[in-house]
Length: 514
Ligand code: AMP
Image (cartoon, rainbow, N blue to C red; front, side, top):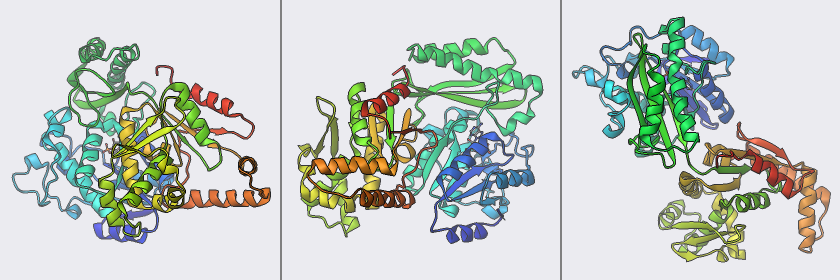
């Protein structure tokens, strides 16, 4: 594992890795299980993992614990090495151009000249109320790290939900080409969220601090019974908190998890966030309340029965069958309508700007109807011309980017079943149900042979097996959208199962509240 301390060394290392994917995990060090979960996720999803360790002076206020913050670099590096990290970047403040403290405290003395200022609406509530300048300091350093490393993905904990929302917004607003991955909160058995600041707590204080999560769970219970109203949910938390006077509440809020706008009630998703002091130690915690109808993501190799099963699951549950193949076909149809050559990617991007896609399940629910700019193209996209061009069109990064954005837009309201190769890993990483359908090469070849024979073709089984094995190899090794099982996907081996049996297995995975 490399230990890097200068920006020049970091950039040189990253440039030497330009052929592979890089995951960045920004931290302030004093690593614990929460950080390790981020590293673990980054390890699974990237070829190289870089952990930055930097106690960022810009995000500490004048009366905060900057000096006292635990610094354990050698131990952190040891943990990183054991976790399979490729490089640790641990610069000094001067190396990053900083000599002062939080921008709000800067009195013009900080030598880092540019401050990144996220939308004040997002930084002036929750923790921002008592920590002016904190998120400007976070955003400035995160932007700098992203520019130095240029990672494919950067990992942040849901524990700091406000930070995560602000960074997502920052990356969108500044068009920084990175995927921000949010990771679930890791907790002690008591429910206390792991934090470097927990070590300021005595044994008794730790027990007291576990009240934070316990009180949030009271709201979750009400939510599960169908309560959506802000006042009721907050009251449930406060009632539980009031039983432990040693916990001094700083704020308790119900906000939209993306925009951080306060909510009067939860329609789809709500973030219940809390900050409190136990003794002198300031602790934060939160809970995501999810009322969105479920997303079911079905991935797997070609020929495992995905499309038939997906249709059947969608029909049974009355959900939208998001036929992503049809979306690629619709774009192909549109590009042909516009007369755009796929060699000219810029022209393709411009044409996509004028492509308004709409999808709806038809009455029987087993077909996806498609409109482009209000014109129905459900049948037109099955023409031989589209069929022969769709594969080349799907390989264009601008098309993929455009369609992933569209697919994610459908995901905002939930209530859909989607199949593909990267639905659970890339398009809907927070899908409620993720399935990875597989079948042996032999079985898939047999199914394909039957299919082709039904269409009147004579084929050789051995030849088919060879083709399928080769396609698997290509699908799982390519750089764009490789076939990969999401770490939280349930694998279903379909060799000896009928379509109904597979469908049944999937239906059992759907949470009963939906
Ligand atoms: P920090 O070192 O406190 O700046 O944290 C570095 C990253 O680890 C941030 O993205 C945090 O949100 C994340 N993190 C900290 N604690 C936890 C936890 N208990 N569970 C998951 N992620 C965490």
